[in-house]
Image (tube, rainbow over all chains, first blue to last red; front, side, top):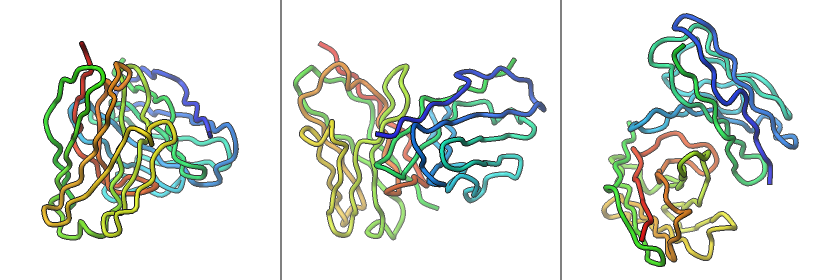
Length: 106
Length: 116
């Protein structure tokens, strides 16, 4: 099983600041990686697929990069609606998720 | 726009079963792969299994395949997930989602609490 390790566990930032979230895979997943946003009481949302492609309706301030074992989700300037929990997920070998990064208001 | 609406919260006894529904508003339901994913308290997300609605072909996570069933009713555009022999570790929010490898659209989640 491919283990995805996300860091940091929690990111405390202010609106307008940039956020950089990391996802590291225990073995190469190529570009078979997605990012999701979860908010309490809401349906989760797909943000990025294939490591760097924005899903429909996702704003340009959200971007993904990386390949192999190291991936990054970047939010260039945090809006109030961006404070949430983010998960990475790989589909290269079965399907596994990371443990999540919570982006909270500082 | 695909919308998935799940059934309400459940409280179950250990050893019992739970069946969660997921109704799709889309008229292309038969083309979907429906997946189930759960999030236990303090844990990350866990993919549980997937169903190709048109063909009824399923794929389950190895640790759940003996206790889990996913079915789809094409006439009502509703998918169901049944989990048996419940234990306290099954307490979680259960989500349905469209997609077999990436998950494009999600339901709002159903809280299942397993407690004696």
